[in-house]
Length: 264
Image 1 (cartoon, rainbow, N blue to C red):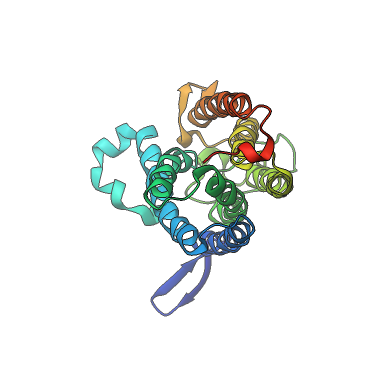
Image 2: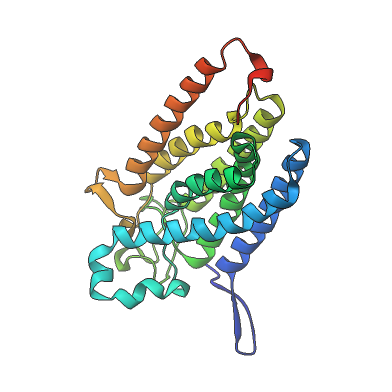
């Protein structure tokens, strides 16, 4: 754990925030390169990256508040204390996707091709951000039952789990995301139709997240079925099924047309 990177007078730079910023800058570089390769309006796409960051954080925060509604009903002003942390990642893509659709239609951009550029950037930013979770002591795993694992003493960790070896779920997810990122770059080069990369993400990440959830130990993330189906697993299932149905639909609608039949 290393929650504070450094202090400069009254200014405190938190490691989590610093790594999130680094992840965003890396994502922008990736998206820019893919946008150029895809013959898109780079300036519009980069503007979309910035707005998607804000919209995505709002969705992530909102879903977190929903999972802890009873707590925030007793302390409504706590919703605004964003410096205390708190977010459910899947809340971001859920609101960003319709925002991207609106934005691309407004500026006449091919929505699927744009999403194919944004998705790899999102994945690499997410991977870097998970190292911030290690520094902050959040998103931790359940006890390993041995001496192997990461030990946390953060206030974000349940009192009964502090100081004992926990599954490094942050590292598990960061590693899986990096592999997914490399796979998506390969798909981007070989894709059969616009939307192939985005749908790869929307089918791949829910599987990763659902598996990681079985090792998570932070009950704060919420459950749909207590102790069995977490909020993130439930949303992952819905996203996976929706992406799979969309993939089947697009393959059928583009059947026999090849790359020339790509659609916006």
